[in-house]
Length: 433
Image: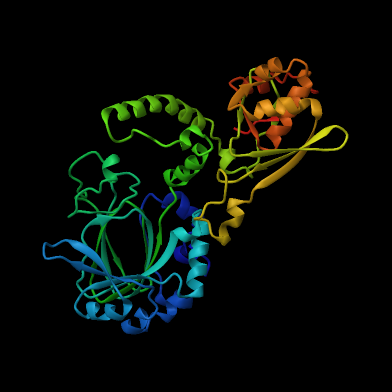
């Protein structure tokens, strides 16, 4: 099995990513004989035997007395009884088969997603079972193994890129109310109907409305990808960044309680919010992906705004010949490899980067000053240390930029590059933002 290409043949993965991924649904009809591996072994297994492959628990899909579509968990030993009673079953199989894990890992890699956000599941539905119209917060690839189904699909013009599941009979979830501002949320009247048969592969993007009717008893293999959004990626990274500030680690006294305490908290917020704004404003892509190659170098100019990478650590130690050994450690993903990355994503996450430089003893005070700054200009550094030459100040700043402790922002950067001017002996500073 080869990840994305195994689902899309004869469509190329590149075409899928540019024309369909996250945008519109895709249906491909193929012969069921094209399946191999564990999917092929499921084709003729009795339902009872398929359930032995289930991860606990099994979700029983049922309709309540009020007509609402719901899921309840049961043990896999109980699940077959519910199926015989006319209820649909849904359960994961990601950890049961070795080739399932290989398939989901390859699929996640091809889609640029982390592996444990991709799982494989089975839907087992009796004939004439129908789901309520709904949309999901995940991307779905479904391979029909047995039986026939009818999918009713429509794009979602009300909520773009939802991160919550919604079913028509339910109220808008509390979190969704922050990005969906209206009371009623209903699917459009116009959509399309797709019929799937054994061997068919149907891709449905997240957020697309759909309901599904099992024309006959049906077994479907589903690859569900809960995509990493910029919000889900950045929130833990921003938290790590903010934790570097002692002021933000203080107890938030007064956020509840008496009016006097709340007023005190309000005044404290007036002080710390500008600090938070500046810290987040100084966050750079290279703080998250420091292994990405920087832009070409250019001479440092006095007006350059130089930003300190607060997540990098600096350790100084005495060395021979009156030099100071400085060890600078920068980490990927703002401080550490996140827990959601498994071993197969180690190459994506990268590891911490450790650099050691030697600086003259007379530049130690400049280094200590730099480490204490959130941001500064080249002119300010030269002004504070006029006992050092501009070449010495610029040279140290240039070294610290190259190892990731500093990053340079400058409104005059493009102008400096366009003029082509600059002393060739000046410190070359990598533009990394």
